[in-house]
Length: 402
Ligand code: MG
Image (tube, rainbow, N blue to C red; front, top):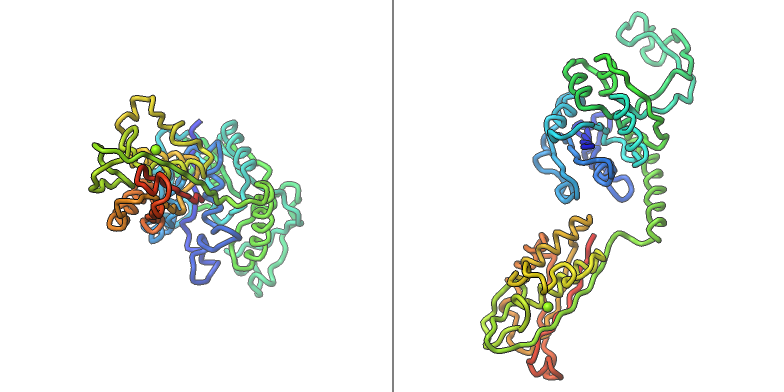
């Protein structure tokens, strides 16, 4: 089933104050927005994600939003929350059957709650996460009627009735809908503080899914210390689950090719004028081969021989820079981005210095990384051994993925 998640982050966070947009405030290791978006991007039941951002942020979104492993669309939010959701819905795939709406201000939504809300909407058409009221609930005179509200504003309001607590649920997000239900609900054009209320007004049955106490909404600066404490607990828990290791991954690669007559010398995607070249399958570009193995190794995704075997005619005359580009796509699909790469080329001759900048640029381009993330260093072997006699060129590479 094709499921679209719409992350409503279009508000300006007016109740939050401060210089920065609330969505970009760091909660532990990641921003509010990043935590909320990641929960859906990482979720196996979610097919695509649409993020509604304030208009100025939508045109210049944070870089990490462009590097996710799922189809992602960014739309500008509207004046009201439901307008943002409507904009998001227009950007959803035509294949989408279930729409799950989540408020970016709830950064601690769990995979389990997302799955249960989607499942309930599949069954009943509309569902929302909500928690039972713990406190006794009093209804006071409406603020819309100041005469009834008494002379002290909010402070002096008088209780009109005590509502039985077991009837009261406090709405959270996610809220999930069959596509047609959400379309009809939004088409009402009513004012509402959530989409479930619109579905209800449109006459649909809306089902409650037991929400989670930690799925708090970060609304005012007073919520931040609580949010930071929850984030600390979650981040430390995640660290323990991964054996206390960080997500940063390192890989190493090595390659060596003989220098022979009658071949072009290709290193780092650059053809270097020289009287000999590297022997081997394809262009024998030892820099690209070592870097390919380093990035694949960092992701524990095998090696160059496994992905691009010389026995396969598809790779017969493939350029090695193209294989590197494919390897980078493989590690991106596994959820990683290239942090940086460092390369040592051991070649007695020719001098590589004049070609280093071009090699860095070619390798960086293939990796989808900035040139500042790629280092290439030439070394001689001081005349020692086979490398020192110029019989071969050897390359060592390390890569960091994050
Ligand atoms: Mg090789």
